[in-house]
Every structure is written in C-alpha cells, then in structure tokens.
Length: 451
Ligand SMILES: Nc1ncnc2c1ncn2[C@@H]1O[C@H](COP(=O)(O)OP(=O)(O)OP(=O)(O)O)[C@@H](O)[C@H]1O
Image (cartoon, rainbow, N blue to C red; front, side, top):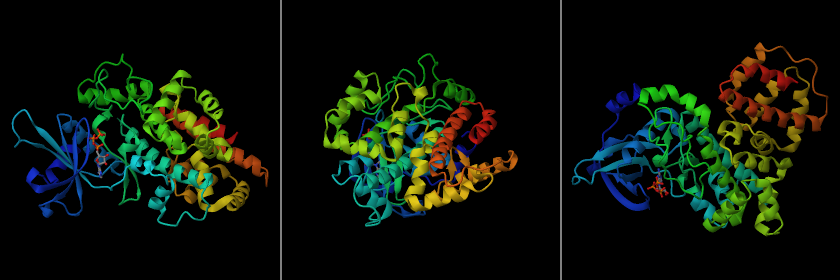
C-alpha cells in the first residue's frame, strides 16, 4: 500500500468531470448518487464500454481508497474500479468526490431474487439458456444453482477478508451480476473497514443495514481503542483481527442471503424482518426457529427445507454455521468454501453419482489416497484450492508425510462418503486453527486426517 499506491497513480490516466457524460440514474444512497455514464474522451481508457459514476460526499475519498486497495489485492472479487477524483470546480463547501467503475451489468442479486422465476433466471445467466435442462425443475436443480451463487459470493468475501477488509454491508443489493465474467461481484465499499490500516475504522460509529447485520453491534470489541496511525495499525491488526474475528460479521449477512435464496417467503423485506424478530426471540437458535416455522406447514417453508436437507442436510448444517449469535462460533469464508456442501457439489454437479462411486473405489485402492483423492476432487470440480491449500501445497505435504499404510475397505461406499465429509470438516477446522495462528497444528491435522 505504501509503495505501490503512489507509484500506480503516476501511471494511471487522470479523469476530470468534463471527460464524462452522465446518463441514467442507477441509485441514490446515503453516501451519494450513482449514474450510468460514458466517456467523452475515449483516449483515456484502452478498453471502451459503459461506466458507472458515483458522486459522493465526504466519505467518497475513503471509498476510493478502499476500491484502489481491492484493485491491487483482489480485483476479481469486486466491481472493476477505474478512478476516483475530487471535483474542485464545484462551489466551496459542496465538494464532491467522483468515483468511476466499469458498468458490470443491469442486475443485482436483489433484482434477480425479486423475479418469480428465481433461481432459474440465474441459472440461465451463469450457464446460458437451456443449459441447466439436464435436471428437471425441482429442489435438486435449485440447490445446484444456490450453491453456485453462494460459492461465488463466498470466494469474493474470502478474498476481501484475507486482504484485511470487512465489507459490513453485504446484502443482495450490493451483489451485482457481471455480464462480462458471468459471475457475481461485490459492490459498494462505502461502509467497508480496512482493519489492517485502520481506514474507516471507527468503533463507535457505524451505518449498517439492520435487515442484514449481525447481532453484534460493533465489528471490533468496543474495548479496542480507535485506530492508531496507519503504520502502527498495520502492525497491530493481525492481533486485533484474531481477537475479534471481525470478518464473521459479513458471514452472518451472507447466511441471511442464503436463507432468503432457499425460502421464497423470506425474500421480501417484511418476510426478512419478521424472520429477524423470530430468531432474536429464540436467542438466535436456528433449530428453534425451524421448529416454529415447520409447524406452520407452508409451501414456501417446505420447499426451502427440501433444498437444505438434501445430501444428508449439508446445506442446513452450513446455514447454521453461518447464522450464529457469536461471531467466534460462525464459520469463516475460507472454511465455508471447504464445507461438505461445496466439496460434494463439484462431484455431483460434474460427474454424477455413478462416476463418483467409481472414482471413490478407484482412489481407495491407491496409497496416499487422502491427498490424491482431494486433489482429484479439486481437478474435477475446477476448484483451485481446498481450505486455502492449493493442489501443489497438498501434494507437497503428501511427499513429506509418512505414507499411509493399508487402504479404505474396498467397495465400502458408505464409509468412503463418511470419510469425504469428515475430511472436509477437518480441513475446515484446520483452516480455523491456522487462522488462529496455530500453524503447528498443521501436522496434527495430517495425523487426524489419517486416523
Ligand atoms: N459497477 C457497477 N455496474 C453496474 N451497476 C452498478 C455498479 N455499481 C453500482 N451500480 C448500481 O448502482 C446502484 C447503487 O450503487 P451503490 O450501492 O454503490 O451506491 P450507494 O449510493 O451506496 O447506494 P446504497 O446506499 O443504496 O447502497 C447499485 O444498486 C447498482 O444497481
């Protein structure tokens, strides 16, 4: 940040108000007004195409800073930021900060969820028209779509979090479908906090959307003092981060989105608000909430649980791990990506039950099947990392660890499936351990896994 940011600014094009022609208004929030726009001076950008301009108030500079940081550290997770500049031509006292992004597309997840055809309308966007027809319409196909959406948002969040940024305003309105990458990206870093350098970190002041915010009032304990100067904050932040796990704030919000995707009756505001009230009254116990609503026998509720209960209820398990009262007990974005809900998904989605059986039997005949098996899952599902480990890292561990003797009982399908689930859980737990700084546990993890 200290070295690259100033350098980068030397080489990036500079924009002025006159270079832009504003079009349709896209939104108006507490921090500014957003327009679709085009460039009058086409030479400024190599790649032509529509842009989005936010005319922001005094918070604009912070939002620009946050966007630049994201562009350097994890650009694929958020809307493509172009530039931010202060408009000093406007009258004094009314300074405006202008922020520019590439126009990602017309639909946010909120727009898509409001459509009666959700989630099939998203399937078409991600796969192309007619491509999901290998399955009949029903819970299995819906589950496949929900899983893809959730995985895309979780990956984006995992990247933000590993950069030290907590978004604090995760909601369907702030998740946009990018027509270019054909996937979901996060927008609106206006309320985000960069805990590594203390930017926008004000423990006593927050501007959160109550519909989606986690029960904790502050993302950092109120006993944590206000942010010190950036360099000191950067040095201290890993400690504060581990103490408070502020990233879990976003996970709770995403859990609520998962819930809304599964239950049609919770997609509108009044549904969500009454869910929040019911959950609070039951001390944030999802099982109690389930008992309450299941008794009501509604079609929407039945449909939601049918999805979450598939594959032994892995969806429901993940949801419960995301929507928990205590931040510390909530799953992290990385661990969630290694959850069986996703680990099994790649296989089911891509090769079907038959091939899964075959590959499990085949892999159970090999030595070292633990690693081989996980890496083959990764290859099949197109996953680049499991629980934060790349394929190369996993293979490397395999080389250095004693070889496993014997093998899983042949043809023991049930056992293999159990192991698969267990392995994913162990990876998730291990990622948590590592995140807690106990790197030495990695070796224990290997032993646990072998056992
Ligand atoms: N990169 C983008 N591409 C396409 N549309 C965008 C982009 N960024 C923002 N929008 C549209 O503009 C709207 C407002 O954007 P954003 O949420 O950043 O502004 P905001 O002023 O903070 O609004 P709010 O306070 O309501 O969240 C979004 O809901 C989205 O429809």
